[in-house]
Length: 288
Ligand code: SAM
Image (cartoon, rainbow, N blue to C red; front, side, top):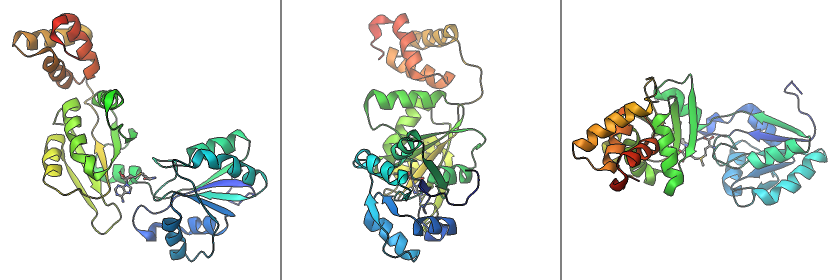
């Protein structure tokens, strides 16, 4: 269906505010008021939003990371039988670092309708307010917390040309900024968009190295999004060019591991690639 008129039997993804309740759209209110069931992460939180919108006695069901898989069959059955099932998350757009995606896929797979009532999302809000190029960007969500999953995502970010948008928990911000400096160097520009649409909204802008100082001086700064400038548009360094730089660093007495990190940073190539090359040049050097 191309128009906005309600079809019977649909899964309806509804965007909700990321802080300021006035951002709840009239269309979102209609969609929630007209739903036979509202799937939400937290019934108390969504209950407060519905109360604010004047929606009485809605049927709510908890669908969070733990329960989404179990909810799928029932939601598909309801949509198939002609019900309108709304999906909201605690804030912003469902399916963006929040539950919803599995429901969408299952409903599509069974040939039923999925509709969207777009609303605020921290990724887009932070990107456009950052002042960094928004023409092409990548959304990273939350970085993996540790291990090789984290380091390979950091490596990929080091080489990424597009502006990158990351979500981060306040108490992990300082650590993540240090890891980003390690992977990408301190000169890259960054914006930290915190408490968007709320009373203490603030957008800090500077370099990654300055951001480490900013974050280190502060209490955990509330909900925030990290927006990172992409890697400079330089032609990719080829292997001989990387090896030449690695030889220069090794000859200056730098350890293989530090040489790889330094060269990855200065040439804007993935650390993993520099490590592989330095290991060939200096097999005893324990670069990895
Ligand atoms: N579904 C949401 C959306 O569309 O933006 C994102 C949910 S995710 C679980 C929560 C993360 O979004 C937070 O850790 C923070 O990175 C970001 N976030 C949400 N609200 C925010 C706000 N008002 N200001 C800054 N960041 C926010």
